Length: 182
Image 1: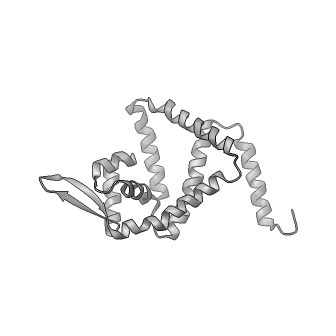
Image 2: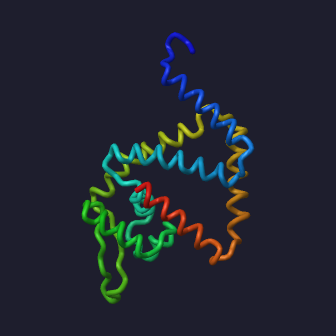
């Protein structure tokens, strides 16, 4: 331990090295899940500082790209069940982030539009995500990042052909984790 390093920091550094040793031979799925948890937790803390719930982040990102989607389209793009989407949208509407409007000629179809407040969140919370991304890639060579990107895209491709029935339990687990975090 250097003279400028606190005992707590030295302990954290030692624990970090221990985790690396433990995870070194771990299954790829466990490593991906652990990385997701770490990045989600880091983003959640930053969003919380801006009074934005982690569970709202995905919906906001989608709406910043394509405002005026139907609730069903938003649910599909977020890969969240429609009841979960409705619950999140109701909460976001109460917070003043969006409005839900029935469309003339089709009273069943409800479209979701960001309010100025919802639009303004972009300038507050996108930098949070960018900060987490900078943390994720810090100290990793461009070559290693390119290899990681290729590998993760291959993993996604390998699993993309999985049947809808087999994906549903994974999607349900992901939703549960998102609810626990949000």
